[in-house]
Amino acid sequence: MKRWIPHPLLAAALFIMWLLLNQSVSPGHVVLGAVVALLASRAMAALRPEPVRLASVTPVLELAGLVLADVIRSNLAVARAVLFPRPRVSGFVRVPLDLTNIHGLTVLSCIVTATPGTLWVQFDRTSGVLLIHVLDLIDEEAWVRLLKTRYEARLLRIFAQ
Amino acid sequence: MIEAPDLPVWAALLVGLLVVGGAAFALIGSLGLLRLRSFYDRVHAPTLGSTLGVALIVTGSMLCFSVLQSKTLVHELMIFILVSLTTPVTLMLLARAALYRDRTSGSGDVPLTDDDASN
Amino acid sequence: MTTLALAIAITAAQIMLGLAMGCAAWRTFLGPRAQDRILGLDTLYVNGMLLLLTFGIQTGRTIYFEASLIIALLGSVGTVALAKFLMRGEVIE
View 1 (cartoon, rainbow over the protein chains, first blue to last red):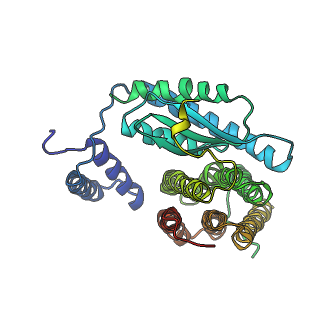
View 2: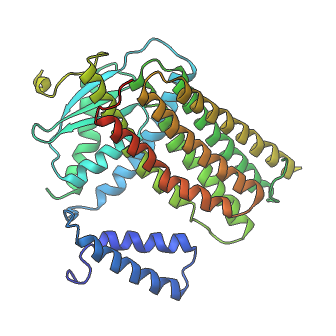
View 3: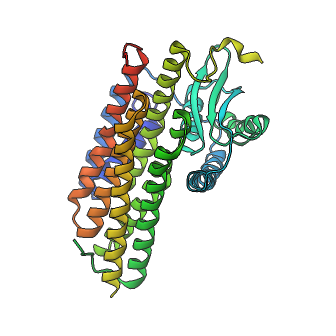
């Protein structure tokens, strides 16, 4: 199993993408998609990416729900900030992270940047300090706490270190 | 220019609301691009269009084509996935480039080096 | 009646997206620095992609979907290349 499908998650994602693009689940497309997914994920193995190891799957759904709610809420907040400008302070915040898994960091960076109002600027791998920019900065500590308890704790549980 | 697909009332209502809502978010995001003061503030604005704006319009499009062809079509999800994966990467790179330029030219109130991370 | 209402809604959305593209283009034109122009360009293509999707809904043709898929896939490449170019710090204003 491990030898034939070196990257099962990647292969599954490619397979679903193929079916979505062709808009059909006919047997022909299923077979062709499976072949493409297997070959492409084996080609990917030549690049030697760090394998994704999930320690736990249940927090994934929890995290997805949280991110959805946060994106909608901060969309409304930023829309309000644009339409009805009021004096506000924006600035940089430094967040010390315990997360070291590269896939976990990737997911975190996508979450932070996709949420309007926060922007991932730079991460220093040696010191583990992340620099983010916040549009509506009221309490620096609150942002650090929010990022660490809301996202990082769950990502630490999802990805095996 | 005035034309529209022939949809049942409930679908027409939903599609109309979703499309107008998505367009409104995209417009507010682009307006923010003009109204916000500094570059780092402005980077936040386009995310409005590329998260909720894209999500709403893509949902409207999926609903419209699913009703028109009377089968479930979800291939528009691809657009949503691609946009929500690529936009954070581009904005992150752009912010880092801007930070680098501000640091080298010494302009603006940006954190200078990573060494003062402890305070 | 419903068709007319939907047509008006879609046209309104298209006008809004057109205005959004105008805002992004104006920021690209205005600057003041190179990163602002790139940000404007990035917003411009996302808005353009959304406009194409609304044209797809309006006409019921799937060809617009293909076009917006290509923009979603490749639009970011230009922004990434420009940002990388800025990162080298060799652009003198």
